[in-house]
Image (cartoon, rainbow, N blue to C red; front, top):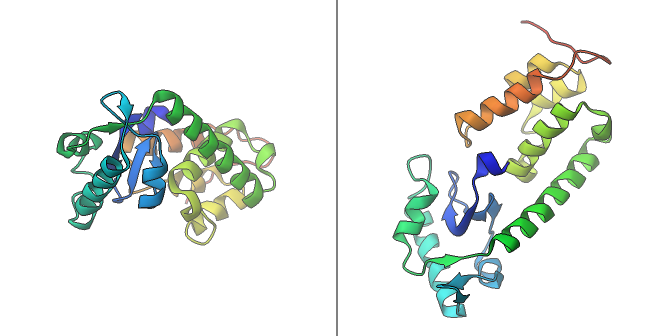
Length: 189
């Protein structure tokens, strides 16, 4: 995930316009943003600096300045505050996120622990990236392939429009590397 999300010590807007930091860590609101241990020039940022940075990002969000044409560095260049988080904090939050995602997958998919490792890795990446949006209702055909142990169907249905080609290719390749044993199979249309 670190290879796909890329670690950012500052806040930015992801391709969906969500305020994000670290390794794809979503910041849902101003209260959460200001509660984080932001630093400014190596010292603890003031509450006012945090609010100003959040409002700046919110204004960019409202103006539509996000998406694939704006990489994370764009927001750093536009920031007046230049607030950052420590690597230690980012790693801790990422691990918390991964633990939650893993529990969520185990809750949604009781057989998760029995799945081939490459499938587990692909599912964890998708859950990490999409959170609650990665569900059987919105991802019907992917989950149908999962229920039927159809490797081909899952690989064909794993594309996410909000992530780059490399990450989609990685996920597809992880799925296509599921060994065709124990009922897992490839199918053609």
